[in-house]
Image (cartoon, one colour):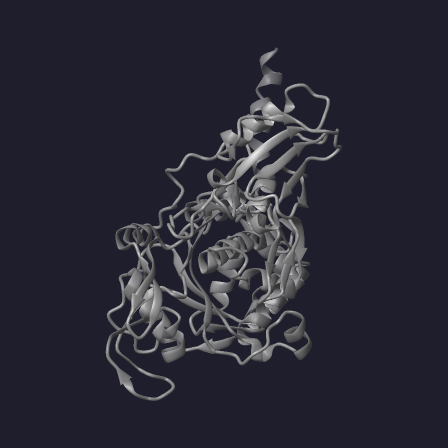
Length: 496
């Protein structure tokens, strides 16, 4: 008799599936999605984000309204003989001198006086990978030597044949279309979309995000833009951020140094946008997007679908998923008759760089990741040209010898003859002749928390007195502007 009770049991188990009749129809729908979007976990979050936007009433409809408000440019009209399309999406991002739209008060405060030149101040190729999980930003120096294709001058109406120019002259003579043609001819990278940002849209974007954090190991002062930052970390609002990315006279690197600061700022901007919840908060997303798109110009094909696609991509970005570089420079101060000093690219290295963009390959894939220690701090003066005398300003035996050895290990020309200071000091002090102030700032970058004390007449020898607060010597790096080298950095390596 044990079997009769057992025999009904299986039927009960077989009767359970009918109770779940509502679910089987849903399974085929779910099973279709993973093949289209392979990384299901991340895509699930993305889908949820889109649902949140839709449920708040600002999804596709709001993006469509934003799309309608963008100023449009027929940037690709009648363009022929273009490069073959690669993988991923390439956006030519151009920053223009739009000071004519800035208020008089902001002009005075942020030193934006003068007449607008209607020229390009910044130019970058932004490559978004095909899987929308990586961004590569390549800065193109505005003074790059370029061969402009034949065109009709938009100012004079005259037809010009191919001729050499500085890259930023393409916009002045033929606007966005000639700029795209010139860039494509130089890089052989097909540009899919064009975005033009002016001073006003830049400041609005930074302000609506609540400011962007930057850090500098040395003071930055530029009398032309009015930038005046002490060493340390700062949260910059719109106007001050504009001063920061425009400054060209804070070191000897001029435009190349400015482009590195622009790349670091863009990485910090991405970090702020992705870490602050802006892209997952419907109302913040709307406000930020309106601020950004309300004063930009874009090609006619950059519409609602592209905005949504880019928004989804940004939700999966992090600083480490972005990489930044400048096109390799082969020769600075390349003189061209009738044009003046230009920057000539290293064509072989440039070809490899742009080949990687066409093939949708990351530039940092084969490079080992840096260790856990902090990245070397860039300095203005080569450490091996800075003479240093170290003194012990504490009761700790052997401290001066340890500091001397650590500074020598990071490249400074120490005397290797440490001494004892006449008195103990609570803080590490660097005494320097004001004529060698750039050397002093470079040394201070290697000694976190140290104080700079001017000592007129002391000469080129810098004197360090190690105080009770000394902790360590930080590694520094000098990039000689006279010998430019291409470097690729991830976003997390240039943010604070």
